[in-house]
Length: 120
Ligand code: 5GP
View 1 (spheres, rainbow, N blue to C red):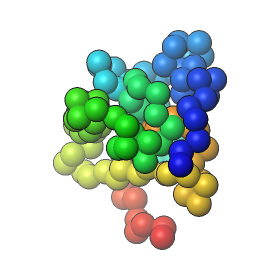
View 2: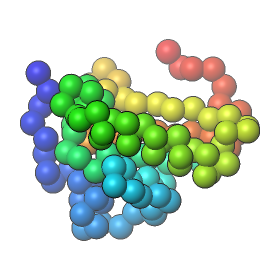
View 3: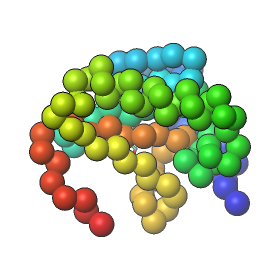
View 4: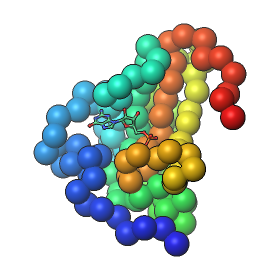
């Protein structure tokens, strides 16, 4: 079972504009902003507006409209960032073994340099 959603998590606070972020995109379903500690020249996080702890929580409870809108937003952000031609990587950490730090679903977009092989 997924943990209950913590309304005080850092990305919930970013969604409410209680703490600043460098937003690159937002729509009805998603908000995208630069990661505060980038590990690639382009490192963007995309989060759903809805209160979902993780990818698991989102795909279990999210509506079809939310899921479609969110997935489409991720693709849009990567295109707008100019990452399609050079290529890019998506990554989602889910839970403890993956090292998920913030309990609000986020998709990482990495790009801007050759990314090398997957770590695991
Ligand atoms: P996770 O390890 O949960 O998949 O990724 C969390 C990511 O959120 C990390 O890459 C971390 O740098 C980023 N992050 C943590 N706190 C903040 C913040 O306050 N603002 C922004 N923009 N990114 C954050």
